Image 1 (cartoon, rainbow, N blue to C red):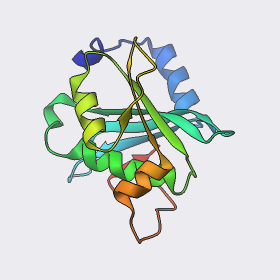
Image 2 (cartoon, rainbow, N blue to C red; image 1 turned 60 degrees about the horizontal axis):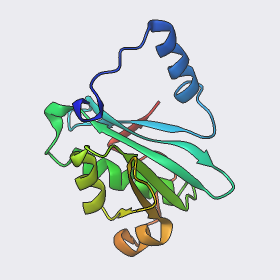
Image 3 (cartoon, rainbow, N blue to C red; image 1 turned 30 degrees about the vertical axis):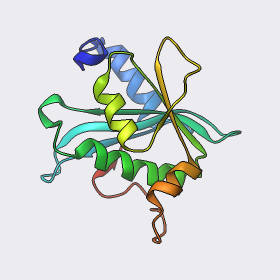
Length: 154
């Protein structure tokens, strides 16, 4: 995670609190999934946070281990997760405030159909609405009712 300032070293207690808050039992505003490779080994994570039930929006988070980047895992996981978010969750908008120097995130999200929100100067804010998702990825199949294969929800 060098692009975001490097590894964050949490104390064991802080990690336990994070796990309780976001994963088990978690809450209604966050959804956290692992990205798995072909061997079902975790290589990253994709999640949404701060889900606003009134306007049905959330903030995206996606990370792929540096050794696994460039193999399509991030793009596949992102599209699968967006299908889940805009389908089963009923999401209407997903945002991602990427760091100004995070070129990997910018490239992944822009090539996946996100657009730039120029109202921010401290972050590279990107967004996708449900309408944008449907226009780009419309699939005649019903969106997944559970977390799809290739993602493993805690």
